[in-house]
Length: 108
Image (cartoon, rainbow, N blue to C red):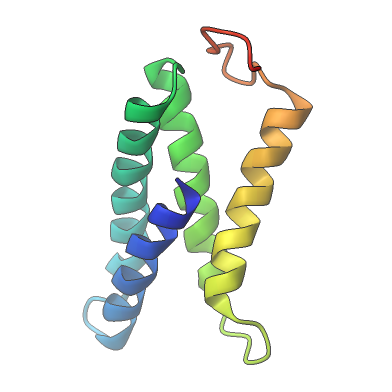
């Protein structure tokens, strides 16, 4: 899910960043697109409830947008944009698997 979200969000942010008129819309549009795509992937591939799917998708999309924003020349934003949301979602799953209280079957 994280790779697909980043594959969609990164070009959206890049296109919006080019236009000074629309630059302020980029993070919102990118996060919304990531939320829709992430929730769609989770809906089709997991047994989580809808609130859990939306929460995890929103978390992944929000973190991806947040870490893509800083322009640091010696760090590849595509790599950071993929790894950081993946690590955040992994940490949420490891620290509290029932974070949303929404797991419908035990993880095996």
